[in-house]
Length: 301
Image (cartoon, rainbow, N blue to C red):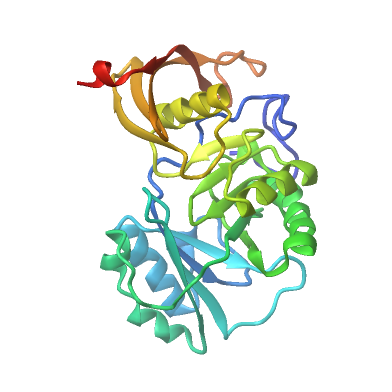
């Protein structure tokens, strides 16, 4: 973790010069977003109040639901009322429910077990518009506040109520980070231009490959396979590309469906160069594609 007010990340971080392929959070599928204007603790499970919010955050984590504290960019409103979203980002049936609470105690009505299973808890109304999260968690890492907070304000000026600042989403070395729900798309190393392009694409029902980190909830090799197939085919629709299977431990083999076609993709882990020296934890691995083959129907029998 970067300490102090400066940036301790490697050269090329936050500029797009380092690849951000296949680095989205692997475990996040169910989400709970709770408005909390701050201050935010270093880790959300350290939240002490208000008690109903702190309790539901820890209960969500215990069930495998990813809790995020959120707030509006810029001038923060007092709570209550507070906005709450429940979301599921895995597979084809993704969704968001939203509700504004007059009292934090209403959080006790949320069925966290259903949310953990990807079932709509019926806690709020269906939300048809995207929920856009920009990490601005400065206490977790200064780079997130330095790069994320200005980006959130800029995006809010263009996309208004869709945009929220949020606590740590993973990968502060990629700040500024953007997460697009309900699909769980992660983007990193964003300036305003790249972020606007990503959101515009999402509003069209597409992904933008530039600065795409991947989709939350998928293993990293699967994220990489999807990325390579999209780049190969030019198919950017959210539902046009799916990873059907993933096998292997060193070289990974994925079968990826693109509408009527299937591809066999072999990806392999590779180490990036080490600008900070061999012992630095910021020297990240990435993935390279070794084979990308169109499968015909006979090969699938």
